[in-house]
Image (cartoon, rainbow, N blue to C red; front, side, top):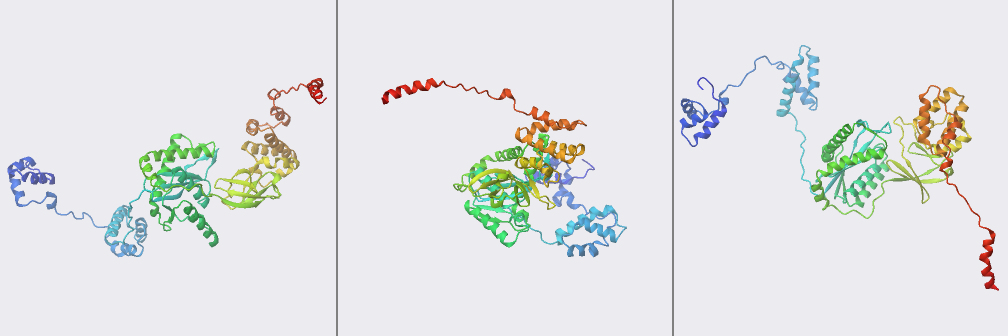
Amino acid sequence: MPGSHINDHQVRLYMKMRQTVSPRSAAACAAFSTATAYRLEQDAQLPSQKKAPRGRRRPDPLADIFDSEVVPLLESAPGIRSIALFEEMQRRHPELPDGVRRTMERRIRSWRALQGPDRDVIFRQVHEPGRMGLSDFTDMADLGVRIAGVGLDHRLYHFRLACSGFEHAHVILGGESYIALAEGLQNALWALGGAPREHRSDSLSAAFRNLDASAREDLTHRYDALCRHYRMEPSRNNRGVAHENGTIESAHGHLKAAVRDALLMRGSADFDELAEYRRFVDEIVARKNARCAKRIDAERAVLQPLPGMRSSDYEEVLVMVTSSGGFTLRKVFYTVPSRLIGHRLRVRLYDDRLELFLGGTPLFTLPRGRAERSGKHGHVVDYRHVVHALRRKPMALLNLVYRHQLFPREAYRRMFDRLLERLTERVACRTMVELLSLAHERACEAELAAVLEALLATPQGMPDMAVLRARFAPDPAALPEVIVELVPLSAYEALLAPRAEEMA
């Protein structure tokens, strides 16, 4: 159009058409005049290349300080943040306005690109099928998961195959220990059906923390033995270099995001029991594996076969049951039946449980407890183990060290507080022990807790032991009626008569 400036697109179109047609026809295709076409024949520069570079329209606010003050700081401390430099310059030069911050950040970024130090380079790797599996732990406490109303401070053990992306996650209640690694890794390998040739971890720094040299060496030998059992070569990334485990570190974020989204869609982070939450996590991981099922099947075919049996994924210790009716292990006191007092028990210590043995005879399983962060001892107490002794010494309940852990449900604890308020200490302790005995002997712990909750809901509600015993007494109608009919003695004589004739 007359009076309009041509642009780069028109010139490129003209040059393309000019390869096959005349200047007049090419100019018509590019929508400018023939005179402009003949000018382009003499000078084929693009219009944008003919423009003079734009200069500054206002004075440079950093002209006096960037080279003289900012650059020396960048050279002496290459890792310093741009915002820290800007705040330092404002402290030195109060007249420097806030609006210069972005200008300084761009200037620093350009200086670092041209004259700054070399940066670390990430070398992307080709992952061979069946070669590498990676393990790591990730903290999940910020998701706000609750088990039976109690917040769950937990981690996830996370395993991933580098090539196919197979994932496995296991809920860990304690820290990043060898036990947690051994249990989670073996669960992953047996779910996968094979073992890779190399296993990469992050040096198990949490497992070695605060341990002496002999303990660290013992853990290293145990980890090496675990890898030998599955014919895997152990490898570890350099300390503090997380991107060397990028295949698993990146997957942490995706898995946590998937769990967080699933909790939001579920509408609640409350679970009735730990097993339910573990199934919830397993379903999320299974859906992620289903999206790459073909790659996983292809890699599974080249994995090493598993050994005939699992390796041990527990620690074994010996404990002595004291006169307190229990034993202390890792700063946690556990109660056991009083008949075991004086016996030495063999304990298999897992991440979430303890398996107890008397010699070679398995006894029972206890949930594993943890000491408090403050360093105070923890307690894992089952009131059934000590209630018979409390009936003989009810006043022991008043100042019992593990009194709060003794009550099986919150309703029992609140009822004891009310009994202490309304009754004398002796009567309150005796009544509370009778309530615990009733819950144990009649197997009505949950039903009795509901009754106590109803009593606590009323200002004057107090338990009546006679009424409660009658309520939770065995139902006579539910008991079988056994009628024994005695056989007359003459029947035995009839049986013995033929035998007497034979002997005669």
